Length: 165
Image: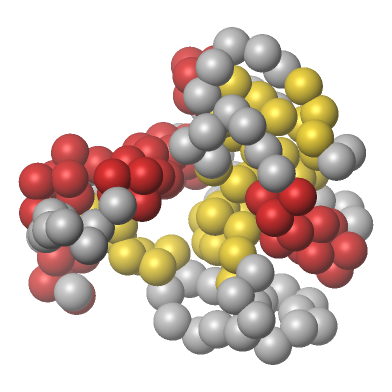
């Protein structure tokens, strides 16, 4: 994996551990440099759900954009993720001088109670974080107190001179 990172074909995200109160996992999350490469290289079989594959590809696309935004900042920011040993996971944590965001990417615009569990736990541990969902579609709304932003709008508006929301 280190060779893939050295060749800029992949990158990893560390676990966000700052002031951690819960037991967290310790291994990094791996992404190919391009979501299309992931889709081509990922094995497909009858036991693989298309929702899972598409969800991970979408997450990879957002990771690429967040990484680009972070690298374009004049002052350093970090990109990580958060996962507890009880399997609560927030896809992306952006931390730096411009702000502190917890971002959950969903393939569906229909959110359910389980979708908010990880963000709620993260918000409980880090009340200063801005927590949000990114979903397909055009409508901005709130779900269980968290902003739900259209994914396309979020990606288009992500420029070096702006914060993430």
